[in-house]
Amino acid sequence: MAHSQKTFRQFMLEDQDIDTDLLMLLEDIATACRAVSDHVRNGAFANVLGAANSTNVQGEEQKKLDVIADEEFMRHCANSPRVAALVSEEVDEVHWLKESPQAGDFVVYFDPLDGSSNVDVNLSVGSIFSIMRLSEATLPSDTAVLRPGTEQICAGYAIYGPSTGLVITTGQGVHGFTHESGTGEFRLTHPDMTVPPKTVEYAINSARETFWYEPVRRYIADCVAGKDGPRKEKFNMRWTASMVADVHRILTRGGVFLYPLDSGNETTGGKLRLMYEANPMGMLIEQAGGAASTGTGRILEVQPTTHHQRVSVILGSSEEVAKIETYHRN
Ligand code: F6P
Image 1: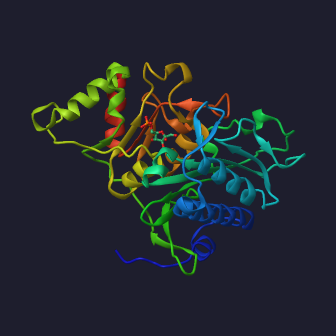
Image 2: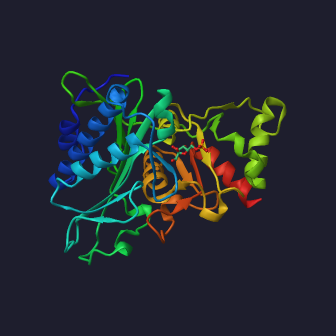
Image 3: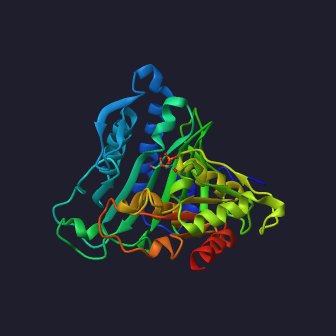
């Protein structure tokens, strides 16, 4: 594949139909990702690995790097005069930056360090973000940020792996950039990423089998049965415990990712967060030709009732997601 090596700014200006306000915000987000990448890589020297001895709003133990990554996103996203509010996984309340938000102002939703349990063992982690615009002037009220994923104008993630990557959609396909050490620029290395419709690879935390409901239990059993089973295919399983890394693999070579509603997480409505995990990943996967479902409907059409809402997530290769929906219908 011939790679264009345009910088992030060049590509956004020349090949994407976006306005200057959004471009400036995206550059601020890219800066936040570069800063987080640096903290992740140098964490052992700065004594910032390990637990922060605090919990976030979800009751999850925070890592020191969760807190640092959140500060980077908060600081850099606040640079843009068009950003009205920030919604972070790590912060209970919606963080309003404007007293009188206007129509067209941005709301940025983010998980500043996804899969942070991987940090201490030196495996891939990432940051996920989503951007919407307020449709009308509003009071800084938390209900104003509760919009379905279909209203996202941009979604993306940074992956901090062997290299640092930035994958983004503005509704015009999915494009991947790699951070070049030296210049410090993100350069377009993976234009027009697509998810093949068929796959024989799935990702699920199979230690939760005891909690699975019947449709997921039957689907996985049929995959595990391999060539002699009803699917007549040998399936492969991969699970990294980092949604960013698992979705990145799917965007690179296909597959399906499941974190379904089960009897162990049903009281909270699932495990993964709708507004800053499922929605942005859902938009990216759909833009790449895949599908993103709760098992019974499109993730992007879920109407949120709280900004930290959780949801059942099944996303990836379109034919496989459709198949899993069939298991749910039957
Ligand atoms: O915050 C969510 C997350 O860390 C995802 O990145 C990942 O896919 C999942 O949770 C891992 O869950 P588990 O701990 O069940 O493997």
